[in-house]
Image 1 (cartoon, rainbow, N blue to C red):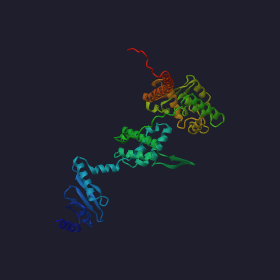
Image 2: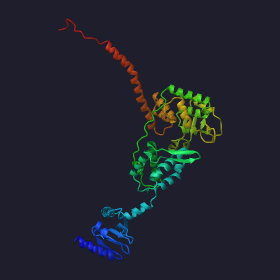
Image 3: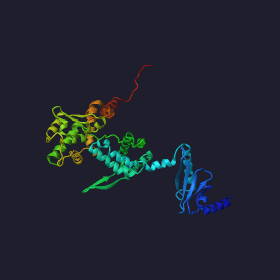
Image 4: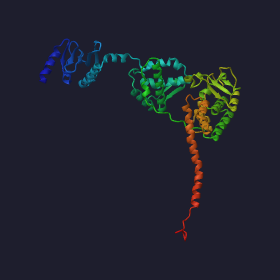
Length: 449
C-alpha cells in the first residue's frame, strides 16, 4: 500500500508543471518530491495548512498557510528542509495552527519583528535625549562606555519587542565573565582597558533598566525586560578610617607630600575638604566660587551640580567647619564660574584619582579605601557618636532616609562589638575572682540534723 502510494506520488511530482497535490508530509514524501520546471506545493493531508514548497532549483521549504481572523490569506515560511526535519517542521506548523486558533497572526508578527526597532536604535535615541544630556559630564562619559562596550555588542541587534529577561541575564553573565573585555585605542598613546567583571555587569544592566524605563515614558517600549533580571547588590562599603590615628596619618601625609611638592596644594586641599565634610568627590572638584559663601560657612550646589539634585530638583547645602572655611579661603580666587580647586593645566576640574593612590600609600591607609570611603568614614563616626539618621542625611545630602539609616545600624553593631570587647576584661576578672573564692567544700561537724 505504502509502495503504490509512493509510486503515485513520484508520477505526480514528475508530471506536475504547476499547482499542488495532497500527501502525508514525511521523510519519504519529501525525498520523493523532485524538482520540476515550476514551483509547486505538497499539502499535508492531515494538518491543514502545513505544506512543502519545492522550487525548480531543488530547494525545499516547509510552509504554513492560513486565514487571519479578518479573512486575509497568509503564508509563513517555517524553514528549509535540511535545517529542519519533516517532524520538526510539523511541530512548528502545529504551534502556528494553535496561534491562529487563538486569534493571532504568525506571519504578521514575524513581519513586525523583522521591522521592529533594535536595541541599538533605542540606545541611540536615549543618548540623544534630554534625560541623558541633563546628566553630569562624568556620568555621561561612564554611561556611554557601558553602552558602547557592553550593551551594544551583546544586545544591540535584538528587536526591542522580542527582548526577553533571559537575553539580558545572558548578557549579564557575559560581562561578568569578561567576554566583552578588550583594549582599544582612544587617543595618542592612550589605551582604554575594558575589563568587565561583576561590578561592571551589575551597573550595565541597571543602566539598561533605566533606559527602558525612559523608553516606556517616551512610548518607545511597552515593557521593561531588564526589571525582572536579578543582578545582586554591591554590598556595603565597610572600609573606613577607624580612628583619630588614621585621620592623623592622612593629614600628616598630605602635609608632607604637599611640602615636598609631590602633590599640588589644590589637590591636597580638595582631599582635606572631602575628609572634613563628607562631600562627594564630584561636589568638591566641581565646586565653583559662585557656590561658596564663606561668611555663612556654606556651599550651596544647584540641582544640576550634585548627584541627588537631578532627581529631587533641590539644592545641596554643605556646612563648612572653621578649618574647611580656611581651606577654601586660601585657594586662588577667580571669577564666579571658575573652579575653587583648579588643575595645573587647562580649565576643567582638578583630578584626584591618581594622586589619591599615592596619598593613601603614604598614609598607610587600607588598600580598599577610596575617596568615597572618606565620606563613609564621616557618616560612620557621626553615627557612632549618636547622630540620628536625619542629621546624617542632611550632612551628606542623601536622597533617602534609608541610606542614612544604614549607618545607624552599622553603629549599633559596632557599639555592641566594642561593648563585648570592653566587657571581656571585666569578665576575665570575674572569672578569676570566682576561681579564687572557690575552694574544697569541707563538711561541718555537728551539723544540723
